[in-house]
Image 1 (tube, rainbow, N blue to C red):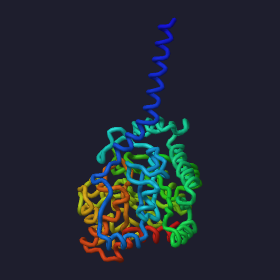
Image 2 (cartoon, helix red, strand yellow):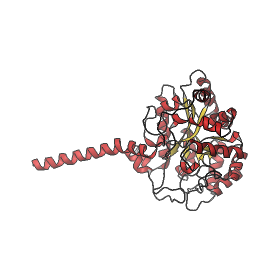
Image 3 (cartoon, rainbow, N blue to C red):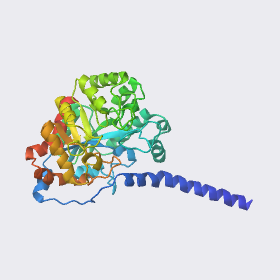
Image 4 (cartoon, rainbow, N blue to C red):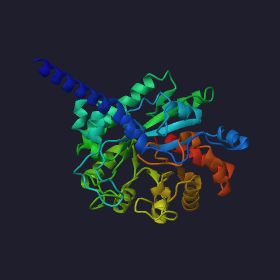
Length: 388
């Protein structure tokens, strides 16, 4: 009997240790491992450049931070952003993109939709049970998490859902720049689960941007990394129509060439490519051609220049600035912006506190002060003022 008790308590202890590891150690380790920086903070620039940087309105079009289960109100020693670091770095507006599914063996060339990396991560983080079997519920849960953070931030973090919200936020920042706002974006319309009513649910939950595809083809259309890489489906046309009726912006990041073309041919509103590179400096299937840059700009759209190696074919600040200059020369300065992909399971040259490093490098690439102001954030603010 004593032997049975010993075995029972041993198994129970082993189970408790396993649960603790799975719940409290594995998720942070994964987040740390997937979102590294090439050069650790603190970062150093001249006093003059630092002063100029802090006179800017800083905004970024893409961060996947909500995926990793961190409390973004707390300063973290890993990952790329959190509210304290955003405030320290004078970021006025951050788009928070929500990932609901990625395939195993994820790559930029060809993926199917038969597997899912997010289920295990969600289970480890203790997401609601209904989210484990529903991509739409995963999107709703992450939106709710951002709302909780905003509610508990003491006013330091607000969620933007309208032009009026943005105007109020910018007005408050004139008296107190220790404030940051977030806009919700969906990364991949597979979270609609083929049901237009789910688009309404997501809009009501605060989503104002929708990326049509991520790493595989879905009910809306083809991904640049999918098997077929097709264009817009009939369901996709209905999604575009309803999204635009709701002033919900379309993000063409990760879209196949055919999908980009199809959407631009029917769009009645400007489109965004929130995080990308350009083939002119980095010839990868993920990146935009010169013609695509022109057609996105022709809609009145915005192109977010990414920071990660596959986007810019390098690991330095200079590589980011070089891609920005190339896109500027084709699209015009009013159509480019920051599209970092912070916390996007990528290694970046710096975390958000390194954004000031861009100033001196952009100047060396021939950007004027006005152009730097627009690229570092004013273009994004102006865009949302016109489209929300």
